[in-house]
Length: 341
Image 1 (cartoon, helix red, strand yellow):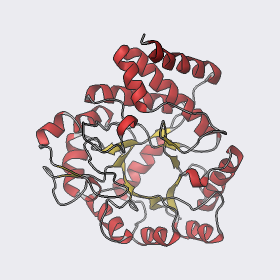
Image 2: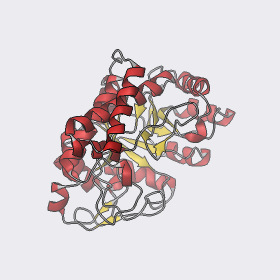
Image 3: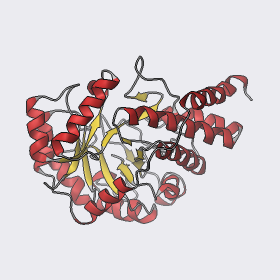
């Protein structure tokens, strides 16, 4: 059976009969996990195995947002804590090599956690460049406020994930850093001139355009398209994401259940595909909404299918890894912030 161009969440730690029936019938391309889906490592591993068995694909991608800091779906007591992205930026300011090493080590450790339970995709790195006065939804998740520094740290994070056998998702393309609202609740509008965006927000994504997957920003950039957020803007996707940034990988929407988007779930889904998203992401696990997404989602085909296949083919076998030594090195680097050296 051909796979459909959407990624779905689920409601809890185990699949209901209705969810099994839905997944078997609709054949989503992938799945995404949240804290509500997580109890312990063996449970997560069994859940991921079942999801893949239903669609008949051992390589079906399972995604998670595991950044460190405020955004950790896997958390104590079964998983360790990781630092927020801003910490790597602080180390980078002391010595760029230290910041890049810490970013790579943290991502490599996260990759080890994910791979052990069957998660194969992390929605990381961020290339968002925050500015003063922006909403705190990005905040210390960001690596810095200068695009070159942000891109360098994002590349180190990417390297760590890939060395651990995990695929990265670049977010939130082409930039969430200027947003003055949390897109979970409302739609941010950025009125910055396009030439300034090109030098700052958009520029941070350019060195990362080779990543296999990216997630859109539910943000309006009025200088480019005053009527639509990037997720549902053909102009933003063609001119900025595919054009100026040069990203040619698999483009997925951010969560279409977020309130930044207008209209019904079905209308949001149609709009994202019409704008040029390859895959739609739906996260909240509400089955009635999942059915609306599936009802508007085509089978993966054409360029979207090519990009999906290319993205999965980019996944690498994990390299040899001494977890204890890596964690000790990361902790030592973090400790240097306390001494100022």
